[in-house]
Length: 268
Image (cartoon, rainbow, N blue to C red; front, side, top):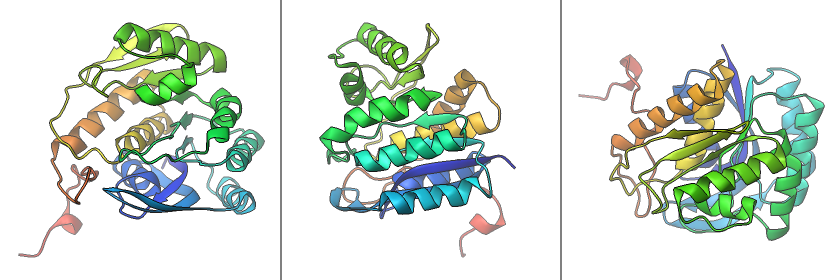
């Protein structure tokens, strides 16, 4: 069985972060492992607290995973401080990790900031050069490319700027009122648009975590980057279309929308 590791923060309400990553990886047919960067007190309405792990303990988690069950792909999500980012980068280099998907999480769906200002530069310099692909949304791509994005042409330009500067593929995610959920993959100078149908579902908590984890899962299984993105988009569309409605804010998706079998049956 192929394996995937998520390095991210915990979401106590289960819709994003480590919890979303593990659900997504499981549903996409790989064995999921995790290294927790922070605990959050969080629900669909916002983040009320963040408690980071120490760099030393994060390093111990990564050592424990890599020296026993080596991941075929790695996804990084919420990493809020400079020291933790440097720890992750050092360990990924030490173990020559492959198929690294960097989700440059900066702001939660609810609007809460999830990364310290000084850590953004470290994220750029330490993690992006290790990535097979980085998956920014429009606000994140604006920060990484240091430019305003107001059109699809701007998405292409920003992805090119990021990709050429850091030597990685870039999936610039649409949405954010810019287009109809169309994403742009820039990979070694070529651009591929992945057209998505905007699903009228206000519950989008954890969409970024879910997409990047699905891409990592498919890379772990040996799919090309383009095919991995295509399959991940199909998965997230299904999870949104299931129209799960939980919580008082922007609720989670139905990660297990395709789950069938005797253990999923409800009591009569």
